[in-house]
Image (cartoon, rainbow, N blue to C red; front, side, top):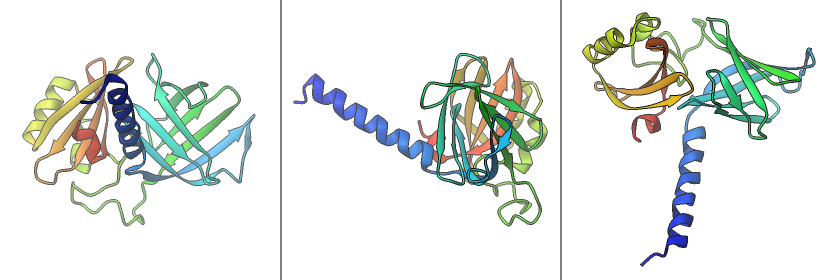
Length: 202
């Protein structure tokens, strides 16, 4: 029989292992610019990897530096692995800016026709972080109406969680098994992106 101390240790190990798989099991390529005090850091800027799931964000820069951000108590507010405050700003397009007190990282997602991993026409193509082609029209719609459309298009709700004033819900497409994450704020769909299989399993 396992005593309580061993049980806690086992649970902690499983949690750490699951967290590692959750963060690094899949990523999407992007371009990142690191600017400190307004100056571009060339050795850190360039191609990078970006991961976002359940409100958590991970960014690995060109020079190998990485940042793990967890949601704070306000929308678009985070804490990095050192406890520093980070605020996210979006331009409504293909880029997001993560701002610290003395630096910022501008993340730009690829969205060009020359990228062979995108624009295949099929709604099941796309990397983690992409918006599915067949769901783009639901971004900006009221949640109740959009949920009806998701179900009508073959998606099944698997789970949901809250972070600040945002709600993250994970849906699985029956025909392909792909998982998508919907971010809703005040009852309106703000984003729909492909996520990892892990997000639809727990």
